[in-house]
Image (cartoon, rainbow, N blue to C red; front, side):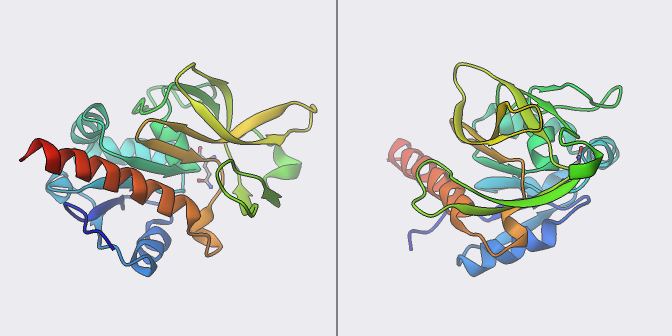
Length: 210
Ligand code: GLN
């Protein structure tokens, strides 16, 4: 397999970062837990895990990671966000806590707790464009995308209680986000899509360095 220019960082302030590190390991990729700014040095991409976006937002302040992460996103480093990670990477959070940070890797407005109490958690097989076999998706207090900007590709949607289909997998350039948790069910294809965007970035960087 083609080598990456550096390890893949996994934001490890809170949430299910261990499961992401495990998936990356299974795919033969070196992962590094990111807790302080120097952990970001040389990373080729970053995963923002599931957990609780409001807590992670507070921890971004206390760890000093907010500024460096915002720079990484602005630089176009590939990022993968699952669930709370989707919320942190969005440009707008409709039901955020006051002062909740958004990294704006994609032009999307998300609702954090979109599925209501009776459907706090559910599982479904959903079609994702580009993948032949549906993804078994585990939604846990999952967010949904209420608005996706013109640059955003919607790769999967689910029908909600009001009968309206809303996006649950979106991509904008090097940023990929899912409302659900592929890392909890042994699903690797979305991580592979993220790794291929790192590889195409790496190829561009290597050409530039010639
Ligand atoms: N609703 C949670 C949030 O706002 C996300 C839940 C999850 O990551 N499973 O962060």
